[in-house]
Length: 476
Image (cartoon, rainbow, N blue to C red):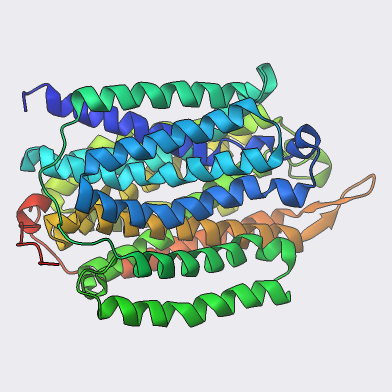
């Protein structure tokens, strides 16, 4: 590669990942008005968010494994094709079934992140890998932070279908750019795709995440909620038993339980929870009516703008995090991130009644998120061989998604149960509800610090590519 091509490769892959991340949250500001726009019930409309979570969780590890086997760029182009198709479906229709189908295809495109990081590992010089992985991983947080304000502005000033037309156009552009700029990796894992393992993992994730996502609406004691949890619990050990006895498993569980991988994935789940609590609570807190005694009564556009400083912090700190990881190691960076996030939420407990302190709190938590999301892929790549990079990063991305799903359910439950009566009738979450959310998020970040301390130490400056030495592929 020429000296310019690595930079272009990183820029194109990161930009495409940001578009995908934006689309994960872009319908959130629409949820209050979508029942009217689609002539549907609010409970049915919520599937536009839930289905994206489900397909993202299911397809990220599956497509990561497919990338390792059949070519990362080839699978990446196919994933972006799904994004184009999903965006076009949402752009041309207001029928709920079509919109849910389109959102499902958009959710599958979350696999862009682990596939992009794997391409960078194969193509970039070793001394640039950590910083490049830091930037690529942070796109998830950056996109999530900017998705809500962008959608709020589009909904306010233009037809809501516009954002899907723009997403389809940008996705097509990135398909062209990737074909022109990004090389296909020569690192492959030969063999057969583990179809039974894929089906088993899909069932476990669909049952588990559907129960987590819809539990607050259905009721945590409802038979269908417990039925889905029970199905996930019953299928999971059978799937694990099968994977351990398969010559070429979808998920190499022996690698997954290594301390370096296991505790990094545990930290990822907890960080995903702590990050998403910031987005969910801030967007709603500033919109609470002034009659609550603590709310600011701001519009959805202003609430979205409050998230932008945190997104900017993530964008600016990603390369800084890479340099910290290069000199002190990604384990140190992740420890620092957990401390910053826990401290940020602790401060928010005492400073959540004025706009500037709320924005400052989101900025602080965003900075911690940037450090964490930048360090996690480097820790994974240091612990797995090159031919498992996409699959391992797919599982790590999955753990963050699970953390976000659990966070959404926990926050919804807290805000629905700790309420107050407002003047003029009606109820709203009390200030204590938000303070409990911040306390839970701070405790989660502190627990992530504990998991990080259990990750085995490595030499500062040790490069993922050096650690992930190429090993002979197993014969089918």
